[in-house]
Image 1 (cartoon, rainbow, N blue to C red):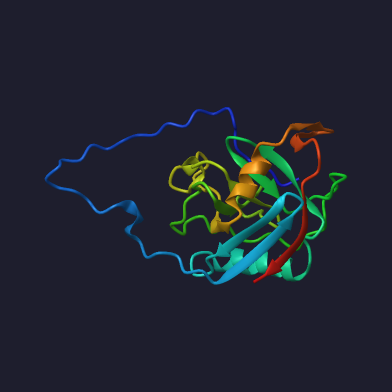
Image 2 (spheres, rainbow, N blue to C red; image 1 turned 60 degrees about the horizontal axis):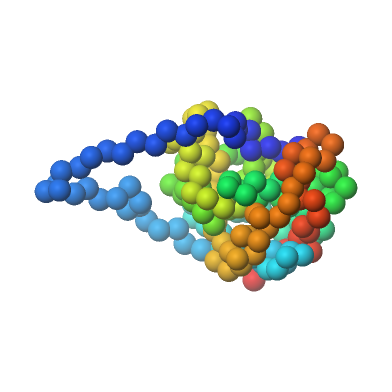
Length: 200
């Protein structure tokens, strides 16, 4: 199973750099803004989520995700891992917790300037950097420790878009009851299904 490959119990250390009031610096986010190339609607059993994708920042990742959408891969999959203060993960498993077949893994595009902030969508992977296939996660908090510059493994997780509608649905999903199911942890007690994923 594709896992986020990180220790959830690990403490994250954030440091603040004091700046003299007379010499303000441009924010780190002064890089050119991402340009939306696609929109995808995830019609779930708890409501619709619409994400916009940034091919200019993560071309291989976006092309991969769009191919899975067009192929109907996400239809009938579930959000199989939900951690209320972290993220919701889906895109690869059926309600019986079996994995759907996938194409070959893609290169990791985590050095693209996009951040794992609340509402962003990123690719799930194993501990191996270039291992992402179809599974993705939506951040429900600002998880900037997953960004490449901050990542413990030096690689991070590739953000490739953000939620532009249905963040309330994401909030509902993150708060569902979860339980272990076989070897899997944090599985919603009642399956949350992606009924259909479509390009808009």
